[in-house]
Image 1 (spheres, rainbow, N blue to C red):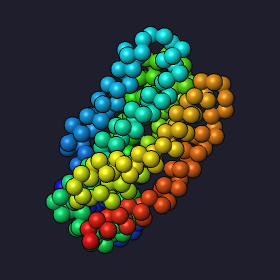
Image 2: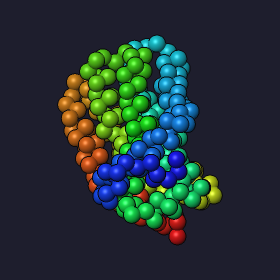
Image 3: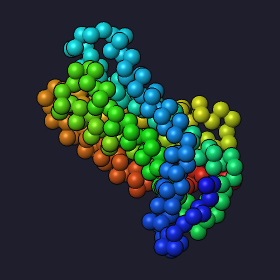
Length: 237
């Protein structure tokens, strides 16, 4: 469906919560109908991470040292590949204009779309990461930190990416421009995410890195829906 049809009676009440839920359910269903895009990002993540042990050899110390950066860079690029699907199809067929004119605030629609994007992209990456981490000889505690850092960090990647995707709607070469916009903003997430795993491997307290990721997640959850809504209105004008 390319509209907010098939709503239940209780969801007809105009409220921010229902706007988020409607947008989430709609985008999640659309993603499930085109599972190829989800699988493509996941396969890309698996292939990139798995190629490094083959390329650098079987030296355990080296593999453990590069593991945090490899996993996080691969996750970042996998998320980047999927960003256009947040708004591109809706913009192309006019659905985005209908959503903007719906009784639900655009910020709530944006929040639901970002949540659906993370649920179908970031969450699978976080769940697969421990299996891939075994190739690098990581222990149970390091694998747990990888999952925790990805669970906190990938939603931030989706939020930042959604802003970039909304700003570049309808722009020729929008995918390249979007990457140029969001990659510098991804760097702090990459540093703190990989840093948490490195701290765990070194026996240092990694809570500070996870706390910073959590703070970024909270800030993004509060601010990004309004930023995306403003960017969508700019692109539609």
